[in-house]
Amino acid sequence: MANRPIDASSLYDVNAAGQYPLVTKANNDLPNGMCRGLLVGVAGTANLMDRLGNVETDVPLQAGYNPLMCLQVRTGGTADNIRALY
Image (cartoon, rainbow, N blue to C red):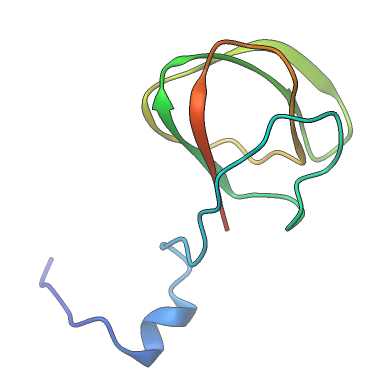
């Protein structure tokens, strides 16, 4: 795959995250809505709400990219330094 320069058309690349804000664990929706995935600095577990409103507790997250769409990153769990990918 050839490297291509980052330009204005890259803003619409469906494979790249355009925003990656730090997540504050809370029992309410992420400020920017449903995320496309999570970037985790410290591996562990998290309590997540999926797009259908189901809450899953102790979901294992690896350090790095986790391709899990979620609406909430709820309080609890041991994973840390979590960023939502949009």
